[in-house]
Image (cartoon, rainbow, N blue to C red; front, side, top):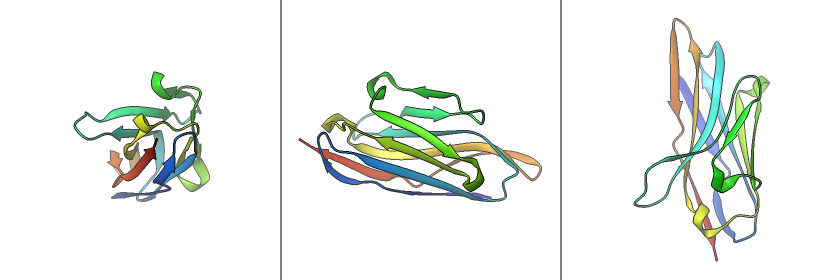
Length: 119
């Protein structure tokens, strides 16, 4: 079983910055992709950014140039540095990790962390 623990959300003014972290623990042999999603009230969950095991990244158009995803493979941790935050970035942010455990692949979600950007 794989557990994800997120941290770093909070309230920030527009133009400010936050850094989210998500640490994976448990029965992990290897991790493939790690990513961040968000869900605003009344909207569907959407991909914000993802990073592969080789370091290739993918971003939603709305966050390109403002957000940076990175990972520390030694710590099984993924980060999301969010700069120049806008009120429309307000959402619950979830991390997602997929990989391989003992005898099976896994795909796990974090519990979510609230990010609120005030205007």
